[in-house]
Length: 432
Image (cartoon, rainbow, N blue to C red):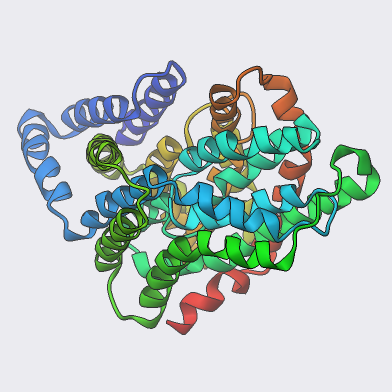
């Protein structure tokens, strides 16, 4: 049996295990180790098992992951999201469905201080959906807004998926984080336009809010100073080159701790939970990273990446058609398995071909992360839908999905824009 065929069988087994809900780290590490053993023998495979866990986790670049995770938990347990949403909400009092727009803007801002799409969705669901329902917003519309605005954290820096892609693709973490700014703003604006069109067609879905005096609006601004300082410091430092991504993670975690402690919002219990949850999440991420490297070595020795690259680059079609096919593949995978798993599985195979076709790996990283964002809403996996179900009592899967459909259509329109106009993504990184 050829090495390529062994690699194909390994990929099929991993996909099958993932669809059976076997943990991604376990599936990829076992298949990677056994596959490497079959191709190269027992001694090289055992040496690989002894080398990869340490050489991978000892990489200085990886220290950015637990630091940004810790920052996100300080923000969450320090209630910065609640204060920020209340402040943004009062400034949208003059438009119909102002709270809907406030949720989208708040979701983008919270994503910039959190970095995790599912965590952002769960937080927004707890804070905003009950408030939207109280103010008379259609439940279906409220579900759709949160299901789509929550995953914005996948795109807006500091995105964990961006950092993981940068490590997998051996690209600049700073450039990838900065590359997500403009696309993140465009996606948020697209959702705002979607809400405007929906309410223009059916104004009864959301009433106008009670107008607030200017003094109240100014007073509420104190609720956003902390998160504004945090986001501004990280983005300015990265873009201007004052510090590296790892230093940005350390500064972000320290700033988040100081802001929440001095504002009196972070209790000792919240601090303890932040540390414990950060350790748990970081350990899970590193286990997945180590397993993906094991699986990557197996793919490399099986010649799968080179074979796929030669096949795709040899097709007699325009490269954009191939990109459409790659995007369709990710959308399909995202319907059944977690996109983090899909990234670990596919990036080592697909990326060489994408680069060979002439596409920028930074641009492709943003595309993949955006597809991961879309996958959080697409059925049947749709993690955002399940997060809302868990956070809001009485919520219905079908109703959440129906509310998300207009925003999913908007996502596909934005995806086409990113595919045909790559400079939208590459403009800021090119200036660094």
